[in-house]
Length: 421
Image (tube, rainbow, N blue to C red; front, side):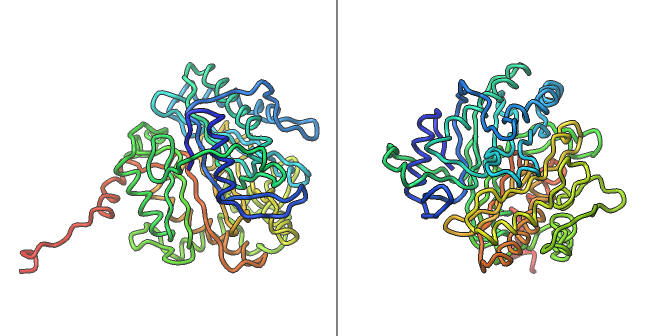
């Protein structure tokens, strides 16, 4: 994680970091220096003069943002502590576009009396397009903050494929930088070997360093009216195939596999396209339905199958993103927590999953298990025998009703000598 006081410094730090950590990859646009996924944060926003951004098929970033911005402003005005304001930009039909949008999602969270913006970028040319993308995110933040009576805070970008082209290296002004690991008010970056240890570290971070706030579930679920949370939890897991399930995890391996196969990926058709609805009676959506066949989409695309086919032809593609969120979610009281995910190759093949909200005790471990299993399947289908896993939560929280259970995990009681007598 890189944190800077302003945009210019952040770009210098990012380009320097990429050069120091890059793998050379041949792309259709030239030789690029590509680094692993990274979270970067500027302490303040910096709106660009040209706010329209990406253009394709007579659409711009702002065209898509305007579909949701009024509802976002209304939600934040009514409930400043909401976790439900996240604006999707990517559409499934973008898989048919030669230059799909780089910014796929922009999320907002009110923390420490300021409104903060976080965006997922499937790809970023850190020399040529940093300022334009950062400026667009800043502009939207400042617009929403101004219309909700809030102060604009920090701007973060979670970048799946940060890169610069070799031809642009001479334009980079190298600078010193310091990577932040562990807790910071503006983000948390935890690196672990295993899924189990990553979950344990996430519990520790939220339990001991999290801040308390109200939630929107208090009227429905007793014990969930408040939570402890941290802002922007970024987990990097180097060896996700070992020690997968913590011995105190609130789910079984069978549940994790069933959840992954049915709700997340629809594994029965992992290697062939889905051409009809896969929702069961009573389901309004599942992550698999959004990824494979969503009846409400204007253009229906089996995104997961399309991504696998793309990677089979070119393992280094940067447009292998699957959108789970949709524009109409902003109007609902229960939008998907998972907003989207991407598979990307740098030094290693990786899956990176972006969540607007994550119940660390009750759901995160099962989420990670399932998302990692999907990454494993995709890696094997395209010819990789190993992978790394990245998990991001904009608001990572523990509900008050689970705090005692978490304490028992983190501080297990040890029998004294007298207890044995």
